[in-house]
Each structure stands twice: as C-alpha cells, then as structure tokens.
Image 1 (cartoon, rainbow, N blue to C red):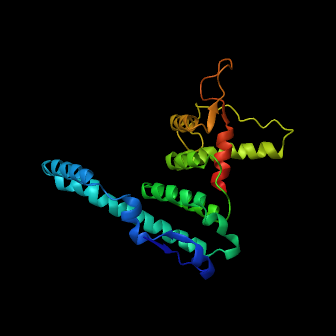
Image 2: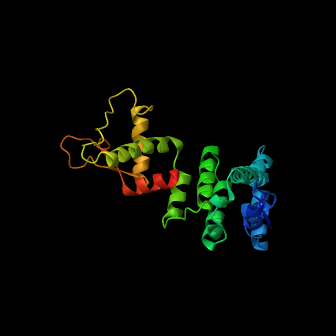
Image 3: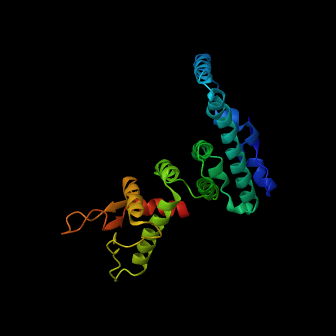
Length: 244
C-alpha cells in the first residue's frame, strides 16, 4: 500500500510518492508475505523459546512482537521528520525527474530498511539528510550502496575523528604551497581528541578497517604502528557525500 506524501507544497504532493508509515510493518519491516513453511518454522522456534523457564514469554516478546513495533516506530518517526523537512523547501528545490526514477526508488527502499534496523537516533538523522539531499537532485554516486553501509556501521565518535582529517584535507587544498602534514600521534598524552589514547587508537583502527584512513607508519624508522595516519581518497569521498 502506498500513498501520496502530504507536505507544504500541494503540487509536490501530487507526484512525490512515499511509503505510507502505517503500512510499513507489512510492506517494509517484515518484507514479503511469509511462506507457510517459514511460518511453521517460526512457530516451532516460538514454542521452543516459550519452554525456557521463567523468561520464555519475555524472550518471545523481545524477539518477535517487540521488534516489529520498534521498527514501525522508527519508520514512522523517520517519515514524519522527512515530511516536515520537505514542507520547509520550495517546490523548485525538488528534482521531480529524479524522485520519480527507478534509481531514486532503489535508494528509498535501501534507506527504509536501514532506518528500520538502526537503533541510534543520530544515525537515522543522517539517513534523513541523505534522503533530503537526494530529493533535491544530488544524484547517487556509483559507490552509494557502499557509502550507506559505511554510514550504518560507523559511530559518531569515528565520524568526529574523520572530520578532523577532513579539516586537514580542506586546509591542504586552500594552501597547496605549504607543508600541512598531519603530525605524528603522541600516545603518551593523557588524551587525544577527547579520548583516552587507547580508545583513540581503536577508533583509528576501525576507520582504517573501513578504508577511510590508512596507516602510513610502515617503513619509517623507529615509528610504531598508527603513529602516522593519513586520509584515503575513499574517506574524502565518503565524508563529502555525507556532508552534501
């Protein structure tokens, strides 16, 4: 079931089609209709869980019933927020051709599933901004599915660290004739970027694993790992995509 999203622009409402939040649980949260064989399997699992002493009923509630309600609430809040943001835009700011395209439909479906499965409110807000930017005509890059996966996995702490590297990158572009290298990281300090040194190193390692930073310490005499860390092209492209 689908319906026209109502916003501050009535003309926009005539062609901007969004999933109806009230129908999310059947169409997007649970997916396609459950085949009989799967229903039997789920029933068996529920019976087995119910047999667990003292907590069986609570576990069934948490695993099955509560999950659908949680996802439904996330989607309702997300689309209400999107509707509020769209209502504040001028109709001319919206890209009608793109919004009615198959490409945008794929993006909407991907975002909807990610929002339903994302616990952090801050992360869902970032997904909202990605959607609003796309609705205003910023076409998806070829790497967008990968960017969305990174966004779902990355933490706000990691994004703060990445922002520091992006700041250095922007300064290098502004002052190309100056040596603006990133200083070696001093892990003997009491804190680094507001984090204990071992926590900061863990954040760097996680960003390196995602391909957003790289360890440039190798081959440097008497330099320990994760002391000289640099920005990757992927990190730059991802951050600029995120910032719109």
